[in-house]
Image 1 (cartoon, rainbow, N blue to C red):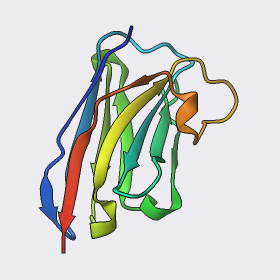
Image 2: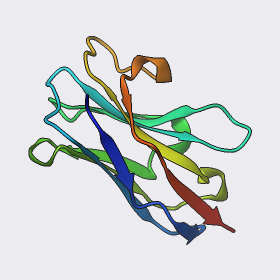
Image 3: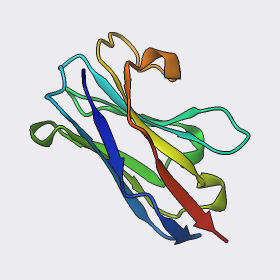
Image 4: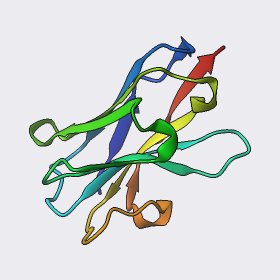
Length: 126
């Protein structure tokens, strides 16, 4: 089974930046999508960004467009989430997740993803 390990979460001030990393325990299959989800207290888990592993094509939720960037390095089995211009509403536990067999469109639904990291806390102070 694939193991995903996130790192990089911390306390930052509003307007600051963070870079989260997620390392997979094995090579990622070419049909895969790797996503970053987040879950804030009292809110549902939501997709923040996702990337097609083979092509690098990306999707973003509207609230982070222009501020966050997802990227991946196949050779390192690693995906990053660069977060700029952070806002207090970005505070959440961030999870990386792997959809092993995605065809067609990237899914925004957490149930589509087969493997999950245990999360890393991002706290943005105002």
